[in-house]
Image (cartoon, rainbow, N blue to C red; front, side, top):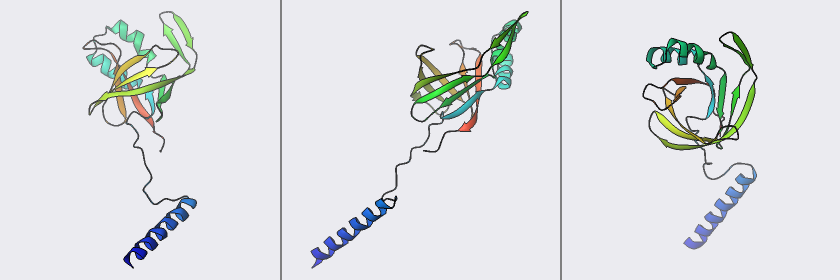
Length: 169
């Protein structure tokens, strides 16, 4: 008698699950993926980059004048599936007495997340336009990161500010 009750209950549960599955729901909580903190769209922050580098980097004023106009024109998007894009907007770059019109461009890349700490993550980027590049992204809160431009102790930094959250899973 008890066995018949168990089988009836199990068959009822199975039937309910099948009906729910046909209706687009399920009997279990669906898997949800938490986006990595790097996912989303980030824009180069010229103001923050210039401010930090003027105060801390070992750049001469002449070097700052050359490098500062390069910041603020790049947008990087990290997508959840390990792909992304780097977009450089068109701008006019003045170099001494010469003006150079930099044309807009977008390039795709793939990336792998490496070791990370509470405030940094190592990322390997692969693309056709840059050989494999491994960089450490240093976070200052959830919406600001910086990357060193070389490996020296007081290396110049470029800051990036989040302008768009990662897409919902």
